[in-house]
Image 1: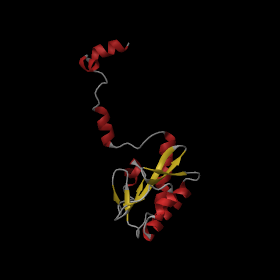
Image 2: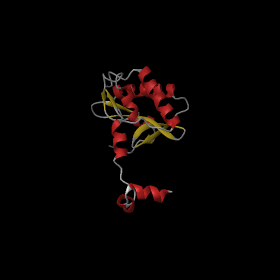
Image 3: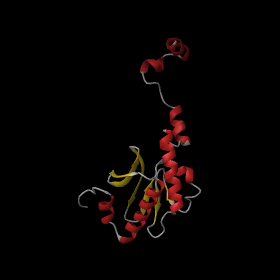
Image 4: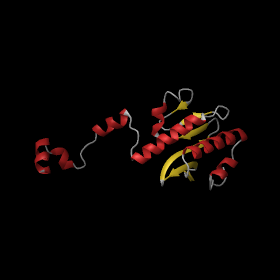
Length: 152
C-alpha cells in the first residue's frame, strides 16, 4: 500500500489515469463552488475544510470513485437517482463522473448548512432523540411531577 498520502496531489498520483482525471475534475468543481477552501487529508482521503469545519471529501476504490458530502445527500435524492448513493456517499464510475453543476449545488448546500450550524436531519435522527433516557438513574426513577417540582 505504501506510505500515507501527505496531500491531495500525493493521493491522486497513485491512481489510474481515468480515476485521477475524474477526481481532478471533481476537485476543480469543489474549488469553483467554495473559493478559499482548504485542502487536507482526513481519514486518508482528500478532504476540504472551510472556516475550520469539514466540508466534503472524495476518494477512489477498486471499482468506483466516491464523493462524500455528508448527510446532505438525501436532499439531492432526485438529482442523484442515476448514481449509487448511501447515507453520506455518492459513488460513480470514472467514465461517468458527477455533473459539475450538481457538485457545485451540493457543495454550496454544505456551506449553507455549516454556516447555519445545522446538519440536515432525517426521520431516524428525530426518532432516536425521542427514545433517549434521562442522564441519571435517579431522574429515571422519579415520576414526571416530582421532576417538574424539583426543576423549579
